[in-house]
Image 1: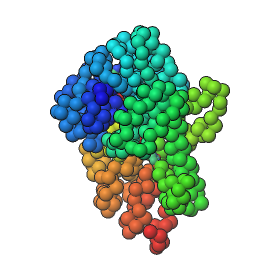
Image 2 (image 1 turned 30 degrees about the vertical axis):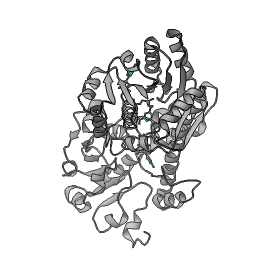
Image 3 (image 1 turned 135 degrees about the vertical axis):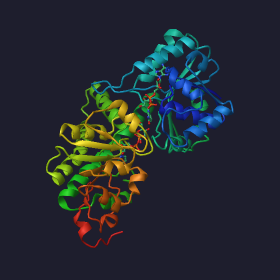
Image 4 (image 1 turned 90 degrees about the vertical axis):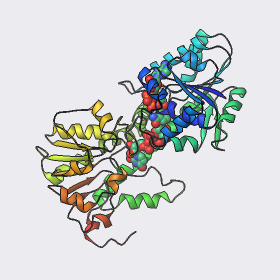
Length: 441
Ligand SMILES: NC(=O)c1ccc[n+]([C@@H]2O[C@H](COP(=O)([O-])OP(=O)(O)OC[C@H]3O[C@@H](n4cnc5c(N)ncnc54)[C@H](O)[C@@H]3O)[C@@H](O)[C@H]2O)c1
Ligand SMILES: O=c1ccn([C@@H]2O[C@H](COP(=O)(O)OP(=O)(O)O[C@H]3O[C@H](CO)[C@@H](O)[C@H](O)[C@H]3O)[C@@H](O)[C@H]2O)c(=O)[nH]1
């Protein structure tokens, strides 16, 4: 099949590479000439495990090409996939400007029948709008489909090649059979539905996962007060198949380019049809508040933050990515500076991407985890990178001026902390377990 992908962000690049890996001819287009030049030179502009070798092997095999010109990319394509950004507007609504420009450019370049798919996360009704824009410029026949994407950053290749399901919405039998043929090698679980339902499935899925996280974070906050252990609670809940074990890790709340934006967009989508999505509003509010737990614990431990050096391990919104969009670390570092502390920050891959969006003369940029903790008054772990999880706790204790460890991701076991002199502050787990013999596995 000949496929054109519009936009080479996470979604466009990963899906383009994966479609090529399935043996299709893929032409990716991006407006950003610097990005296209990098991609043409075999370099990947994002940190995503496994992506670069797959991209290079498919480019070398001639199945994957990059251009800045939409007409060139779509000329021979049967399927056109729009994967441009839909960032949040100040009121939370999704910004449709990139989608609309992409639709116009496709309309202008159309040279025959194609199936136009929207993979970007878009409000219900957007595919109809895309159809109308293209139809303004192109009078021939074409079909539309909503093909939402469910990949996670950090495991994007694995998720795309082994998805739990593929969802698409279309009114066209021909488009349905073409898209089924395209995705059949990936999974048996293909949900074919109408366009509006497909658009809603994406928002509903992200909103539900965000709800699970805020739910377990609230349980964690109660656990802290009643002396229960949220990781035990989550484990006990997760064995119930109706609940499921995933997305019940308590911590500093969700970040990233999707959950924060898509929850707020769904609240707006509901609001536009006069529906007050109370539950989701609470999910967002709980998430916003959850990150402040780190600061409360620092206050408890240190009394004041003025003049204190605070090691911050982890700036990315999750491990295995350099993406810092909506990372809770941004606000935590900002608050630390506002409170007169000196953050000593380190992340294995996200230092540069963080520096591009946040810099302050009051902070110290460290080149190693060890450098960040050396002589610091406390350590806050904000991203559960393997390097931090495996760090020797005795070495942390030795390096810190005050042996205070705020574990925002609950990565250390009581067993590991016991026997060290660290004052340990996890999320929703009682520290008195450390003092007594811990008998549960
Ligand atoms: N990032 C994720 O993990 C993820 C996962 C699932 C769904 N999504 C959704 O997919 C969409 C894309 O997300 P992303 O993170 O890949 O976006 P991104 O912002 O990282 O990348 C978008 C790319 O599109 C390019 N672009 C914009 N207008 C263009 C045009 N007219 N022609 C060609 N290129 C154009 C930009 O230059 C940019 O490189 C969003 O709607 C997002 O919500 C993202
Ligand atoms: O139990 C959990 C699970 C996740 N998180 C946090 O939630 C955020 C999002 O994590 P994750 O979902 O793994 O990463 P994303 O790459 O943002 O992927 C989400 O957003 C994408 C964009 O829409 C969707 O495609 C994916 O299906 C959806 O999982 C991160 O800050 C995590 O630290 C928790 O706090 N606790």
